[in-house]
Length: 393
Ligand SMILES: Cc1cc2nc3c(=O)[nH]c(=O)nc-3n(C[C@H](O)[C@H](O)[C@H](O)COP(=O)(O)OP(=O)(O)OC[C@H]3O[C@@H](n4cnc5c(N)ncnc54)[C@H](O)[C@@H]3O)c2cc1C
Image (cartoon, rainbow, N blue to C red; front, side):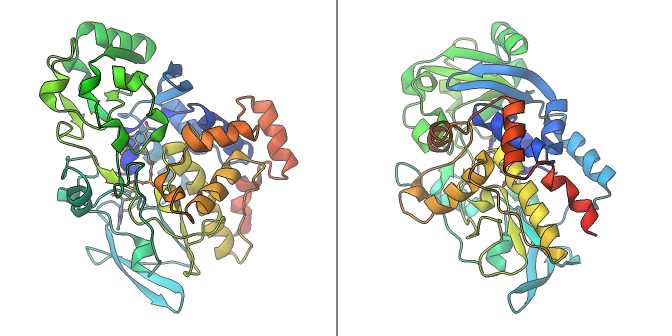
C-alpha cells in the first residue's frame, strides 16, 4: 500500500501543522492537504495540548491518494521493494527491485522513512509488534540513500536510547464500551481516566515529544480516526483491560500492541535545505528520511518540496530553498542545523508541539489566518511558485 505509517495516523492541522498546510496551499502545493480534508471524520477537534485538529479516516485515505496519483498519470508500482542500485560517479543511474524490475531516471527521491526493519525493533525496542509496515510479509525498510553510500544518522530518545518508539496504537472501536464509542463518534475524542502506573515509563520512549504532558499520564486519550487512536506507545493487554470501559479492548495496530510498537528514526539522510542528499548529485529525500521530523504534514511539506526540486534539477533549473520567513522553510533549516549537534539528535521536530512549535510561536510564524499566510507567502515571492512545474517540460 501507499502512505506507509500514514495508514495508521490521521491527526492533521493540530497547532502549527495548520500554518504549514496553509503555506503549502498558498505556494500551490496544497493538493495532498485537500485530499486529507476530503477524508475528514472530525474537524476542529481540541485535545490536550492540541487545538483545531482534523482527523482523517484511515479507511478512506489510501483510495483517495491512489486515485489522485492515477489521475495525474503516475505509474504506481506495488510489490516493488528497491534493493540495489547502479551509480556512475556521484549519480544514481538506476535502481532495481527484488523482482528484477529496473527503473532508470534522471533524478530519484528517497521516501523510505526511518522505521524498522525488524532487526532494529528487536535490538532497540520490544521486538516486532506487527505494525502496519508488515516487514515479515513484504520485507523491511531498505534505504536508497544508504545504498547510494550516504553517511546516515540515527536519532536518540530523550532517555538516551537509540531510535524512538512510535507513540500511538489503535484499538478496535467496537471493543470499547458504548459510552466511549459515543464520545468518540460525537466529538472525535474521549478522555478515559486511567491509573498513572499504567503509562509509567512508556511515554518517555515516545517518538512524539509533544505529548509529554500530565494529562497523557492520568488519562488514556483516544481519537476517532476510524480506529480508536490511543496516544500511548503500547500497554499490556490485561492492564488496558483493567480500565473501566475497556474490558474487551483489542488492538488493531500494531497487532501486538500489548508488547511494544515500531521503532523509528534510524538512518536519516544528510541533506541540504533544498532536500538534496549530500554526496549524491541526483538524489532528494523527504519525510522522516529528511530528518527528525514527525508527522504526515511534515512528510507532505518535505515530499512536495523534494518532488518539486527533483523536477527542477531534471530540467536543469536551480532548486528552491524555502526562506526562514515561512514556517516550512524555518523547519527544514532548523532541523538540519539541530541534527549537527548531539543535543539536537535527541529531539524530535513537529509543527504540532514541543521545540519546533515553540520556536514558531516565538518567531511569530504560527498563524491560522489564511489571508495573513497568503500575504506572507506573497511577500516571500512564492505565491503559487510550486504550481508551475508542468511548464518546465
Ligand atoms: C503508529 C503511528 C501513528 C502515527 N500517527 C500520526 C498522526 O496521527 N499524525 C501525524 O501527523 N503523524 C503520525 N505519525 C507519524 C507519521 O506517520 C510519519 O512521521 C510520516 O508519515 C512519515 O512518512 P514517511 O513517508 O517519511 O515514512 P513512512 O511512513 O515510514 O513510509 C515509508 C514507506 O517506504 C517503504 N519502503 C521502505 N523501504 C523501501 C524500499 N527499499 N522500497 C520500496 N519501499 C520502501 C515503507 O514500507 C513505507 O511504506 C504516526 C506514525 C506512526 C508509526
